[in-house]
Image 1: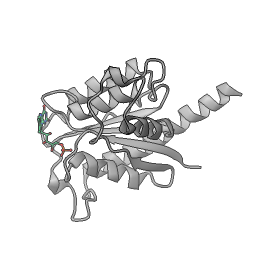
Image 2: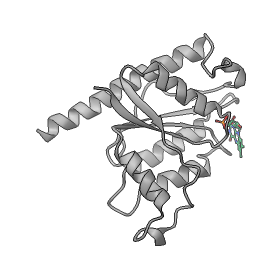
Image 3: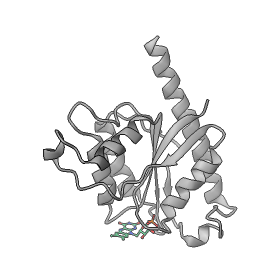
Length: 191
Ligand code: FNR
């Protein structure tokens, strides 16, 4: 059976390159992973006062993440860090205290940028949050995708032939292996 993956994209931009990379990973791994993008743009800013009586958007988001076997983050870097919209979604999912929906979910982190550093800062900031959230994050291949622009994709939004496509294909395969490993290990431990 295919593992269910929730993809969280750190950009709300309609033509986001990170969203296109996310879609490419969905396509490349479609025989092994059932991926869907969980939208985060309408989540109100996290407010701890709402823990007891959360807005419907929080409840729905938490359910969508809880239902997934694994999480794929595809994010731009904003001012050398994680975009606020993505950090907000992470904070919303992490609470109320003790009820984090991120706990133990296998994950991978991809950052894409037109710049040369490939979102390294955002990627590692997010990695650090995942350490605290107890998410086993895939180590390799690392995915700091630099020099990614609209030209990296064809009219259908598919990656053009080249090294970037090769890297994203290997990423998709490694992520499917990673989620499988973690899900199976947990099953064994539960027996
Ligand atoms: C950026 N961008 C950017 N790029 C980068 O490599 N490092 C950075 O620190 C920043 N900072 C930054 C801040 C803000 C507020 C914006 C709007 C943009 C450029 C960014 O990588 C570029 O706009 C990407 O296309 C954004 O990703 P999406 O939306 O295409 O997925």
